[in-house]
Amino acid sequence: MPCLPQIPESEFEMTAIRAQGAGGQNVNKVSSAIHLRFDIHASSLSDAHKARLLSLRDHRISHQGVVIIKAQQYRSQELNRQDAIMRLYQLLQSVAKAPVMRRATKPTFGSQQRRLQSKMQRGHIKVMRRKTQVD
Image 1 (cartoon, rainbow, N blue to C red):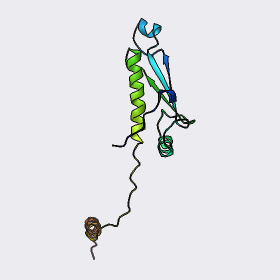
Image 2: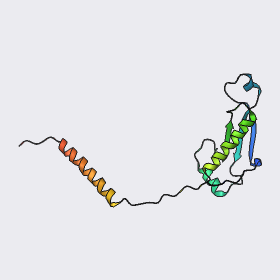
Image 3: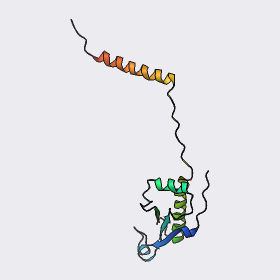
Image 4: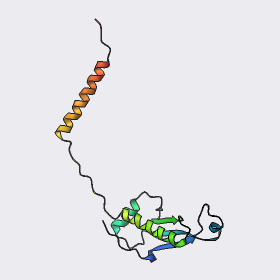
């Protein structure tokens, strides 16, 4: 498994915000949700990691190259903080390994013969569906 370097806490910014949804008075009074922002361009990741991360089509990555993660699953601010960091590392882990390039191959002789045989068989079935001509 590819290893990512540890990201210092100074590279991402976390702010506590009020969570959305049901929860009674706790939601209205306590800022338990965490809003994590990670600037890809200003990070200490390698250029290859940055390029793969920026090429992802992920709704959490803005057009400016900032990863925005909102964690509000738990009622505790500390658990939401850990959840946000874990989700950031999962996103970084998904681009840690370079994708394997596809090698073009030729179809085998047998597969070509089977393909042509099935085409002839289908053609024969369609010929048999035609009306016969009476002289």
